[in-house]
Image: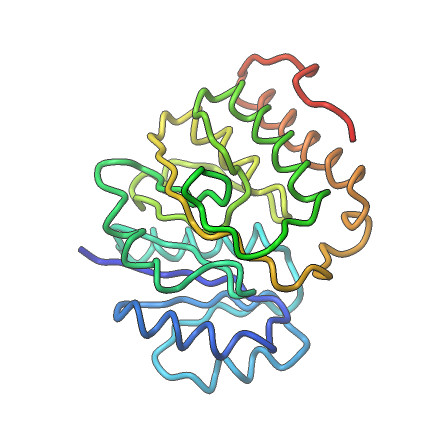
Length: 242
């Protein structure tokens, strides 16, 4: 079975080399790195590591666009399974084989930092956890997936299922769009516990999204847009304010 690991990158120079070598240690197959217009020398680190496939953005297009490009690459090149993993030390590359093995007959195997068996390796920034919980509850009400962590970037996908989606959200709300479309296209989903690792508590989203209220409003706006697009029903009262 043809398997791919996709790694979105934006200004990850301090951790990038170690994480990419760790990924290569636990995954002997293909790796595609999506460099989202990095300006800190990440591009030089990527080019110094042999055997990587690289998609380079001339400018920063957004985390969501990097994921979408990884999805499209997996579809265009005939892979059967795709695992996405961030390189900011929040995910454990040693779990990549478990992600591929665990997907079974599901369309999506999604990592969760909040399942009971998830190891706690650092305090979650309070605003991030609260917004995650608010949005996860709302997504569950619409989809019935019973998720515990809707924003974890560590996932394994069946590529044939990804090819059915119509994703175009370039920003950090791409996971919100993904879950609504996953429900519309009837993708099957299972969660797996992954460690909860927060080493860089000062990491920023950038611009107005560093304001938790504005970040939540942005997620709500994308969710409402997707629900209208696919004619799904829900109650806006499900999303609280912070």
